[in-house]
Image (cartoon, rainbow, N blue to C red; front, side, top):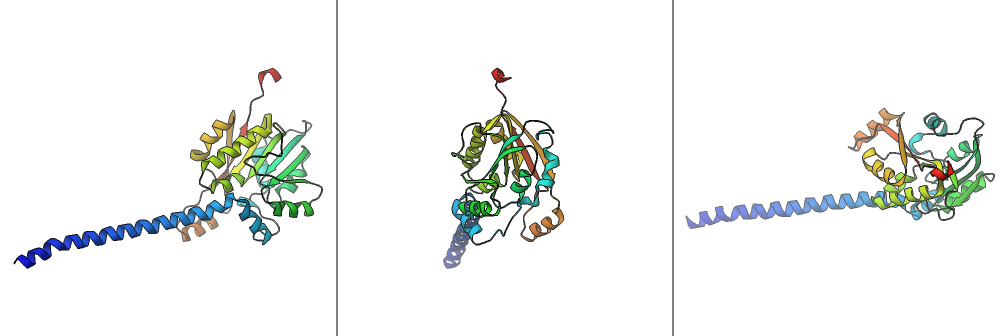
Length: 254
């Protein structure tokens, strides 16, 4: 009958309408999740987040990013650290937080001067009160405007790059590398300990520095991290990376 034919013709339209609505709803959910994830990592690139976290004690008395101490890292740095008897270094520790690494580096014989900086005035005041013999300063690592060009022989970054990468804006990484390039002396070295993969970081580093190298640091608690990652349905990197960036000494100075 004509009534039955009409029913068969209109049914697909209703299904199509439901499918369209369902697809739109799914896209909205996905977009909401992506926005939430972006927000949750965006905060790592803000002063307000770090001030609040350190003020409320979220990171305790001290916190070691990637569970890598100076003792863990030192063997990977032998090629860029001075030999005994060599001139001592002026060092910048960027994004120092409340990590014990600053105190451990300060004990090295190769240190002449070491400045520890962080964007959070809260953690800087805390560390200054705990270790008054060391030098502490509030500074945005993307600018380092408190320091003149070519002020340091060595710049050390563990976790600062990754905090800024949370913004999902490569400009922050570019600004960071440009600031490091400006304050490091020709022939000096920038050391960056990070979870940033080669495909993302190498092009940025190569555009910022004359020479770039790397070392791979296997995660020592990989099995435990993998179990936790599986629970939340994401994959964990099997290693962290140390990147080395340096500027050539001008020929006139050789």
